[in-house]
Length: 275
Length: 355
Image 1 (tube, rainbow over the protein chains, first blue to last red):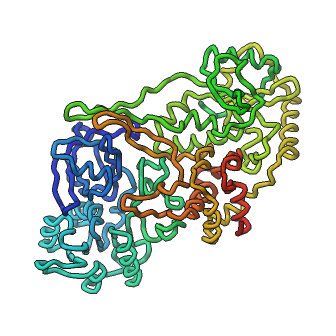
Image 2 (image 1 turned 180 degrees about the vertical axis):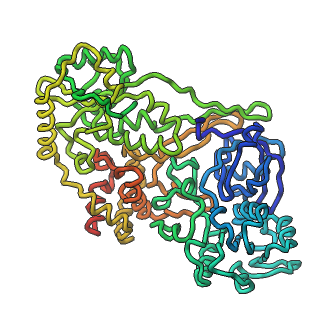
Image 3 (image 1 turned 120 degrees about the horizontal axis):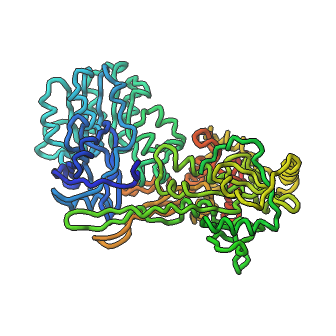
């Protein structure tokens, strides 16, 4: 077995500016064999290296059903992310992974699926959304609710336009504060709950976003009658190794990197430490 | 090394005390030997030795565990990187296949090694740890004179080990009883200075261990069980953790001296086009340990960090995962913590629910 800390050479194939501070990077391993064998589950993450700046974990935002490349969506906030934002198409980065448990996409077959995303929380959900699109027959009603602070902060605007045209899913987008030319919903993402009908006992909710949003979304879902096990979210922590060794991402007796990042609300509640 | 029992009955030998150094010099011919020695300052340490005269087996545990120092050093290079045109050349540090005999460690440190083995080599295998561990043979000694701060009996990690050793020495009158625990250990005794041990030697060892357990320990008993219960149930008031946290200086020494603590940080060092990725010991008692780029810190209060540390050491979840609690009773935290928040003190506090 190879060294678990050794990154593999990966080329930036495409870059897309999503918001003023957020870009999507399409990546492919330099070694075609490695790329072909790179299999992952929606909800898993990779460790990205920019030598000199360091290494950081990012959720994969593409579906494993799309072969040949994968993507991450990154906001420039820290040392590694700012260094990544300076790179161009054709540049090389290091990748280790995939790591983490991923979403329970097989277990929720035959169910209605509700996605609730906030801001930069949409990328990991996007992986599962496209996985479900590519296996649409396995799942029943799909509802996607997405909110951001302003229209400018919405990621994947092209995707959102396309998803909005699909008749086999329901998409609703909202912003906390509208600009002049915004014609959509205004208000936090939980306000969209009033406008949708859900078959709660047969629905599994996937929730990703900032902690404050997750808190209120879960509160409302519980009020609607969702079982704790049917509310699935991802946790984030400062993380180094990604393989359960460095100790940084531990919460209670769980490690976000190997036991997560995907947890259901019952698990989150039992963590013995503030999630 | 393979710690499984060799399967043979009566794998015990006897060596005269006066022959110990002759034997060690034989080992030095074939292996790199790391052993305890006395510094000029009067302290003790472990170092590679070239002659048995350099060592002393009558020593007090150095503040840094020799096991941790060797298998999980305070700082190590994980990889070297160099920019070459448009690409990065990445090289792993060279692995050595030199066999190392770690001679004269105590049962607490051997217990810590078995704990670290499980942590670093199960699930995702840490290559750096494993490559050194694969080449390490240990010779531990039964403690008959524990230090003032020792409580290995409470942690069930000493003063002698029942399994998990390559070779275990116990001083009995003019001899050392040598228990063989693995083929690698057997390999070391394969020379003339040994004779077969007898049943009576083993009986004498058992008597000595019992006597040590019953009469020699100066630390009051550390009652882990109630502490494990309270910590697992999360039934300890935040106020108590905050009180304990108030005594923490955030120096991280508890983590560094603890032989089972294994958290690390990773950083890239060097110039833009050339450098190395380095890992170094980290501590969950540091404020920055969980601080995220956004500034958000889930464990901002010192009390939360003390809680975290002891949750990791003593909660039932970790206990079942690791097979033992994260304490071997070596007492190093007692010696090191300036705030006095060491294992026995915290165990006492969480048992009673007050400081």
